[in-house]
Length: 221
Image 1 (tube, rainbow, N blue to C red):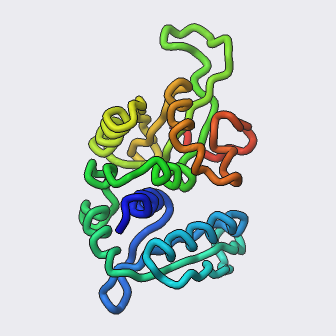
Image 2 (cartoon, rainbow, N blue to C red; image 1 turned 30 degrees about the vertical axis):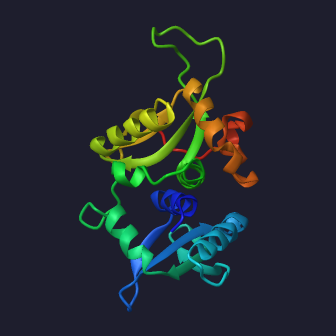
């Protein structure tokens, strides 16, 4: 498996995609996306099929009833024996996803972009500086909804610092008793520079340069 494809694969698996096992015992890569993200779902399906040397096929539309009403979404699934290895690597916490340094080291800038498109967002940063003084400008910060343990959060922080020279911070999410990543305005510009070339136009609203508070949907700490 070439490094570039593996980086993208791991990136989206850290995000919204997952691996499950079929009747033949091989792992199956799969994801679901909202109907409005159809172009992104089709792009992801095409890239994954080509990377796994499978015939390209598009995700299917499904409609189901939820507690919020009727929802239509795109669903995609493809099996491959390579998923068995990736599953052992990624689902190392008693069958649950775990942010280990070994997993993170597989990421490429494009892989981080896929992770961010799935689980990232940007919002207004703190209105006061570290001394408690009001800021004289609007700051924004990028975030990644990792919702992981503190140990995993520290691993992610070390990874971004040592590999990309980007300083991340862990934020505590009380509702889930877990941690997500936040990047200051300065560090967000570094992260944006790293991944912007790979962000599809649909997700430009998740980048600081296109910041619009009405377009965001990210966690509160």
